[in-house]
Length: 131
Image 1 (cartoon, rainbow, N blue to C red):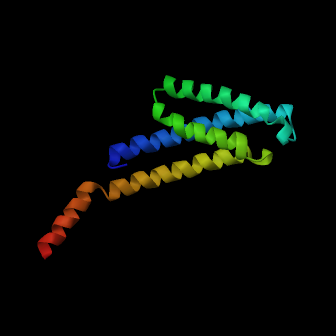
Image 2 (cartoon, helix red, strand yellow):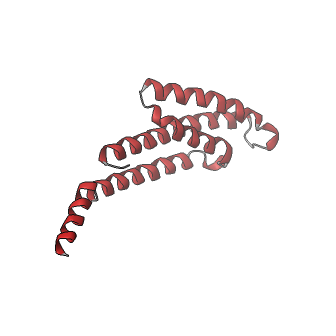
Image 3 (cartoon, one colour):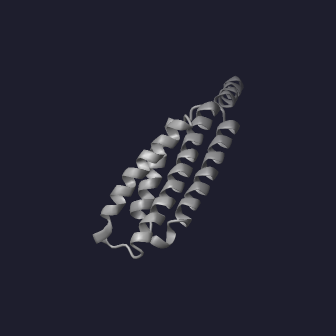
């Protein structure tokens, strides 16, 4: 973000969306493998139905918790879990994605705190005086 407040809001939306999409995706994928333990392309239609249910759920959750900015990242994570994650990684992938996002958000906010616009302006002003 452009400042600390914006970074905190954007990072929070991204992290919360990743958590919501990951949890819903794990639950829906678990339902899918109960019906089709060894998924093939013949049975993928059920994933579209589960995606429909998942999108409704994640929109409702994000709206109820008043975090509409989390809908987009939640939808991305949900789609990745349902359509791109192997059966043996449907739990580990979302957990790793949530951890990666949390680390990235913390680093991003940290960088924004350490290198704020005010600090950069002070450094520029300092070096202009030296000339």
